[in-house]
Length: 328
Image (cartoon, rainbow, N blue to C red; front, side):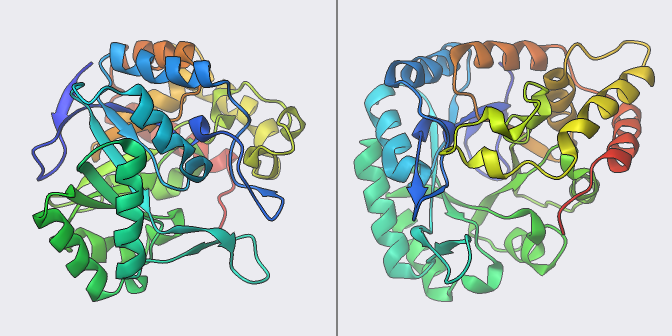
């Protein structure tokens, strides 16, 4: 697995990372699913081991995934002697904003410090390589929190600070604010074919010394072409309520039109989706949310097929914009 340095850090990471939201399993808040389907413990462990065996040395998690279960899984599965970069996140709360299904957030210094220490306990580590604020707007992070993060960095509790931001923040002042924050080393963003317009904006961004981490290259699995209906997901799987209108029916048309535009067609929906993301000129690392060891094998094989040219990506962008309607 090819490796590269993450921005201005000294972290040398594989170009694929393992995302663990799905490994956290079922999680509901007030009866509303915010987690994934139930997954046997043995499957979750074998997925992590398969990633490590394949040369993936970056694992992304959060204290929110399975209400801490994903972090506990990593802490119990990944030996401390293993050379792996652990990235986690904090700031989400197990509740909703009044009258909405938007998860509450707290980026105050007290909560963030407590959250980090909780993550370290579950991960069974003295320090975390990358600690990310989970979904903040730039104006929602008090100056005191940045000061607290710097103090925690100096004390050895964390090595680097990052942010994982929502898609709607990519086109406004928030992205630039984080890019110019000297404490922020990485910015995690949602990047996939479904959000082609935002992808174009990112490809042209002046990322300076920050490393951009791409999440959700398969759009929670929808871009793999494996699902024909949201009914295929259990009622306690958050994906059941997240299929955009007409998206699944448009996906087949999109894939057909893309293959018609190239002499060498793509082998699968997943092949197209993942190679498109890892070929971005600004993406340092792509996080794949696998929940089975076979998925790890498939992703590694896809990446080994090589990157797409800029001209190929432009053609794919144009077709994607005609088929997928993005949320405002």
